[in-house]
Image (cartoon, rainbow, N blue to C red; front, side):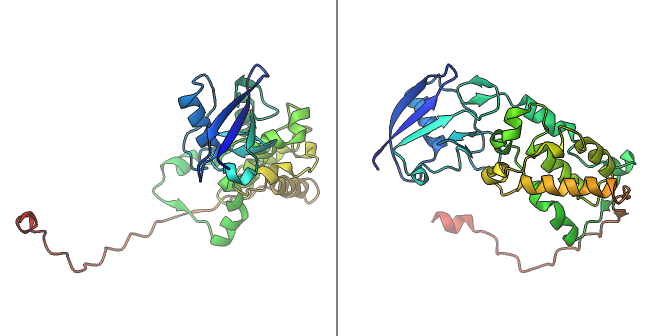
Amino acid sequence: MDKITMEVVRSDGNKTRYDLKFRKGMTVLDALIEVREKQDPTLAYRHSCRMGICGSCGMNIQGMPRLACQTQVSSLGKETVRVEPLHGMHVIKDLVVDIDPFLAMHTFVKPYLIRQDLKERDRSDREYRVLSEEVERFLQFDYCIMCALCYSACPTVALDPYYLGPQAIGQAYRYMADPRDEGWEQRVDLLDEAQGVWRCHVAGSCSLVCPKDVDPAKAVQMARMEILKKRVLRKRAKAGSPLVSVAPAAAPKQGTKAPPFDFRREGT
């Protein structure tokens, strides 16, 4: 494959095609950057880290939500690559979509550590104890980079704009499973609503497109179990992990020092 064609769906609904020379290792983001720098400076899209960390370059590539920086052109097996803005979100311009509703859902579930004693949480010189087996309960869901691919792929989000969405529910469960958190009951009440976890139809598309294998569909099911524990088993919120003193760091061992560098000898 020597050449590729980028077919971009613009904000006016028209498709614009750009011919590029293919090079080994080229990603879809590389191709878009080359288009904007050399052919069409009006093309709009988001990107930042180019390392699959920031999540800002999410878009529909060949009909599936993906990160442009992680998608190799060669892996698509097509000489014509179709790129569209993420579905289910208002288009601002070209491949740039409005993520405010997505962020609003994320904020709604209180995605932060809740403690009854705020002074203890924010100003203590000690730390909360978390065992390794406790970390395993929520670590998978902590890898979310908020790229909104799962949100765009969710068929329920497309039908119900008030549905919290898989990302927000996944982050809510991440803190519900955290032993340091004391907001379990608050989040149970937030998720136990018509537009909460019970609105999910378990299509699984959210987990399919997640670039970090967070598995939001699993988080939805785990959150449902937490709600049933409160409803059926009458479970009550527990106090979070206690603070423990931080062990002082051991002094570094004194090793053999490197001999001083002789600049005069180096210059001769």
